[in-house]
Image (cartoon, rainbow, N blue to C red; front, side):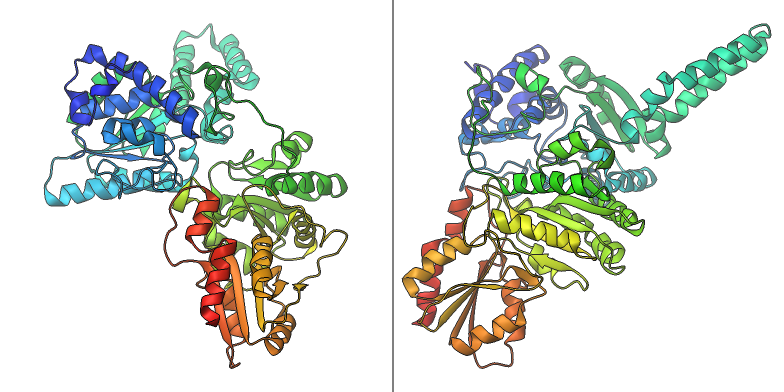
Amino acid sequence: MYQLLNTINNPQDVRALHRKELSQLATELRDFIIDSVSKTGGHLASNLGTVELTIALHYIFDTPKDKLVWDVGHQTYAHKILTGRRDQMGTLRKFGGIAGFPSREESEYDSFGTAHSSTSISAALGMAVSAQLRGEESRVVAVIGDGAMSAGMAFEALNNAGAMDANILVVLNDNDMSISENVGALNNYLARLLSSRFYTAAWKAGETVFKKIPPVIELARRAEEHVKGMVMPGTLFEEFGFNYIGPIDGHDIDALCATLRNLRKLKGPQFLHVVTRKGKGYQRAEEDAILYHGVGKFDPPAGIQKKSSHNQTYTQVFGQWLCDVAAKDDRLIGITPAMREGSGLVEFSQQYPERYFDVGIAEQHAVTFAAGMATEGFKPVLAIYSTFLQRAYDQLIHDVCIQNLDVTFALDRSGLVGADGPTHHGAFDLAYLRCIPNIVIMTPSDATQCAHMLSLAYEHSGPAVVRYPRGDALVTTHDVGRTVHMGKAELVKEGNAGVAILVFGPLLQTVLRAADQLNATVVDMRFVKPLDVDMVKRIAKENSLIVTVEDGVAMGGGGSAVCEILEQKDLRVLRIGLPDKFVTHGDTSLLLKECGLDEQGIFERINAYMR
């Protein structure tokens, strides 16, 4: 079935092929990706779009001596397959298997680890300048696309690279898509300008006036060409100091190879603009690249079958809450940095399009944009993944918290997120948020609490964070009908073993099961900031051992906040959380077990500490 692909064990084997064989390799490689991802799940549409480009890059460049730096990282399955990992694709994103993104630990061909957007040009420039300093002739290629050009970091790097005169090639993989539809002036300004009624009418009017004066009409035509040139992408990148080539068909492997061969010989900053189709070669993915961006297991002939589920996810709880509140309060604004589907904003964007803003992959801008709206009396709600808020930390402190602005942060994907691994785990938010003044941090333990806390955060007149995990939201009865009060914890279970477990967030039910084995007291802390100091002191008086449990790093998180309250007490405090290391990828329940955050792990840690 894969007659040619099965002979490829490294890029040297690719370079040994005749040019005419590359099209067959592309067909087999695309079929292999579809078949493989249908069995493991993973990113599909983005990888199908880069097959020919990946082959051409390895065919022309002497990898790994020449460096390939991939942006975003979810477009590298073809790269992994061609660099000796074909037989490992069945382990993709599984515990102990290969990662879904480039990983320097995994292969010498993965020049730079990535998964967040817009880092490739900066990293590639660092490598190119290093080669220059060592007097080496190696080449460095940054492949950027899937909306990554909407982030300021990419333009910072372009600006610097043009001044460096380093031997770097930037390949813009232009598929007109990120994860949600691309937004922003760079994508649509030219088309809007040149197709506008104003432009057409203005040109026709001028033509009517000046048609009897040939020198003037010729001057007008030249002026039109100059105006077009000022806004054409090529001119933009040439202004940064790059030699711009393109756009060319990113699925024409002959054109790609010929162009890349010429570019490899050129010195200085080069820019190649290639146009590809996300989902190329699999019709269902071509027609719905968003649905087929990240997939679970599926049957390729039948496509993805949407499963009905009785369980509501935390993301859906947020999406419903947002629509409900927007119906009552026209000050509510919904903002996302290019994650409409993942953050549960689809329905809101359809019902309230005038109050919905997708700012592109630009987390820094998203936070300060929200801050600006807050100064004008609106109530912005920023839906953002925990791992992506890290990218806007300065803006969070400087633009929101110092000014104590009324911005609500719906922090999705907190804790361990599973197969996407260490670049996407929301492991650090509690630690990096609780040290900031003026901020409120809430950790719901079930669906009802999540909705209550979102309302409380929205009503609060300053910055507030509600952080919740990926996946199904627990539906429990102990909190139904109750109001969550600012900074107040709840005593959920009383024991008499002299042990009290203070839990922050969604591990509450796991802790309750472990507590049954220990006859321990359990407190649902609910808030990391403000911490319920009275409850902590009361529990400390009644118990000889205090245990804190959270699904973030133990260092600096909710447990640390408890220790700070009890630092003058002669008490034993055991903090249980994620370890001081980057947790790998794999099934979330398995990762929790590996970290000792399952029922048995929590029981054994406490039992061993007591002994």
